[in-house]
Structures are given as C-alpha cells and as structure tokens.
Amino acid sequence: MKFSDQRKIMIEEQLIARDIIDKNVLNAFSKIPREDFVADNIKYLAYSDTPLTIGENQTISQPYIVAKMMQLLEINRDCSILEIGTGSGYQTALLAEIAEEVFTVERIKILSSRAKRILDKLKYENIYFSVHDGSMGWIEEDLKFDRIIVSAGAPEIPISLLQQLRPGGIIIIPTGDNSQQQLHKVVEKDGDYIHTMHDICTFVPLVGKLGWKS
Ligand code: SAH
Image (cartoon, rainbow, N blue to C red):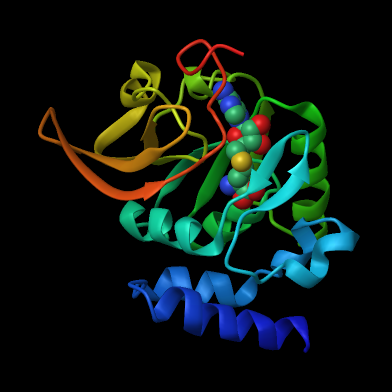
C-alpha cells in the first residue's frame, strides 16, 4: 500500500478513533511523511502503532502519543515553541506546520544533524536547532516561549523550563521514574502554575543536569 494511504489509515484508526480531535494536529499529521524520518530497512513500519528505533539507543515516539501531547499543548499559529528532544525531527516538523517558530534542542549531535538535513529538504524555514542539554532549556540566547514540549522522560519538571515559559504558556512533559511516566501538563495563569496529569507513557530518559544522570 502507498505511504499516503497508510498515513490516512493511521490518522483514522490510531488518532481519530481514539481521542484526537484538534484539527490543526490532524492536518499536520496528514502532511508529514513519517517514512522520511526512519531508516530504509524499517520504512515499511513507518505507520505502525508503535515507537521505532532511530539509532543511538533512541526512538521516534508512537504517533498517538505525539498527537496527544500536541493536542494537550493547544498550539496555534502565533505560538513560539521550545521542543526538547529533536530525535528524528518528526515531531519538530509537525510542530512547525502549526506554530510560528520552533526552537528544538537535542543532546546527541548526530541525531540533530540528521533531523536538520531532513527538515531542510522539506523546506522548513521556521525551525532553529541547537545541540546541548535541554534540561537547561534554550541556552543560546535569553528567550521565553508560549509552549514547551519535552519528548523524553524526566524525574520532575526542570525549573529552567518553568522559567522560560511566557505568561499564559503551557508545558507538556512526561514525568515519572525510569520505566514509566505520565504526561504532565502545566499551565501558567496569573503567576500560578496549574498542574494536571494525563496518559501513562514510556519515553527514553531526559539525560542531563536537571534530568537523569547518564
Ligand atoms: N519527538 C522525537 C522523539 C525523540 S526521543 C521524535 O519524533 O523523533 C527523545 C530524544 O530526546 C532523544 O533523541 C534523546 O537523545 C533526546 N534527549 C534526551 N535527553 C535530552 C536532553 N537533556 N536534552 C536534549 N535532548 C535530550
């Protein structure tokens, strides 16, 4: 079956049939070729309902969990987004489809370079890449963000991320122990942080100063 048909079925069966209703999110998924972000020998699995290996002991997350995190993030065209854990760059592309700009941080240089190559080829001009420990947030310059999304599991929310959130901003991050986490949403409202917990999930660890020690 053609990848474009597999993509349609994935959106129907894995996203809409569950609880993904955000039109921006569904529209972004319909545009991005997930097969471009995985190695040739596993392209036939590109639309399966699972995470897939991307080398360096890391994974591209299951489509549903990416969609769920993006829906919880309530993204719109005006958002400036910080993404921690570029990985394959697949989620970066989805975010860049919806938001004004995406600042993406990866600690493993080879993954960042590969993601950049693919995203340049897809002609994105609103993505900024950096290789450093993203548990410290964005360190290239002093910036604040409307939305922050972390696609690696952390013991708790790094304080640096809370400090880089704009008023009214939202953070989504999986928190928990090494084997299992829960999607943790934080909304800044009038100087307070409102926390809610969502889906159970399993992510690779956020390795860094304010994450897990390597
Ligand atoms: N959303 C990604 C998933 C990547 S997996 C995708 O669609 O492919 C999580 C990524 O987080 C891995 O590439 C891992 O190297 C990275 N990571 C882990 N700890 C990090 C840290 N402290 N700073 C930046 N990236 C980190």
